[in-house]
Image (tube, rainbow, N blue to C red; front, top):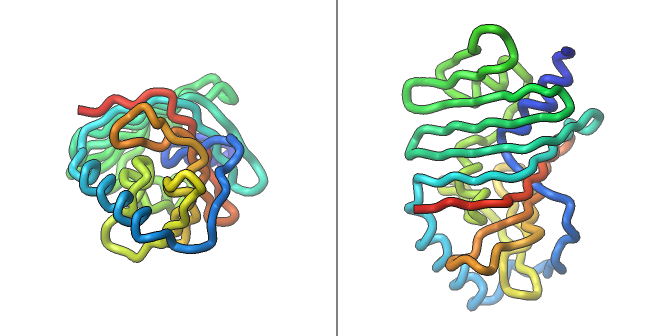
Length: 203
C-alpha cells in the first residue's frame, strides 16, 4: 500500500464531514441573540469529556481521497478512534492519552509516539489541530485561540474559522437539546475532511 494511500485513509481518523447542501450563510458575525444562544450552547456542552459518535467519513489531500465508517470514543483525555475503510478492506485505530499515542493497522506492530499529532505528522505527513477537534465536532469554538462564527438563517452556526481551518456545519440534529452537528465539512487547503454523524452518545 502506498504512503499516500495510507495518508488518505488514516487522516480520516481526525476530523469529519459530509456533502449535504450547506445552509445559507450570512457574512456578518451574528446578532446579539445568535451569539448569546451560541454562548449558552458552549456552556452546556464544554464540560462534556465523555462521548461516543459513529458515522461516515471522507477525506482528501487535494489529489487522492477515500471514505469509510468511523467510531470516535472520547473518555476524558483518552481518545479511541477507529476508521473502517472499504477502499482498503482494513480497519485503522488511533488511541491517545496522557501517556502517548499509538496507531494500529498500518504495520504488524503498533506505531507509537509521545502524542497523536506528532505521530500522525511523522507517519503520514498530516498536521492537524487535534486539540481543537473535540470542540469542533460539537459545534463549539475551541479554547485558546481566536475564532469567527457565521450564522445561517435558522440562527445556528453555519461556519467557524479557527487556526487556519474553515469548518462548515451543513446539518444539525435538532432533536437534541442542545442541538449537535450532524454534517460538517472542514478544509485547510489542500486538505479537506467530511463527517456525517449517524449516532451521538453523551452522558
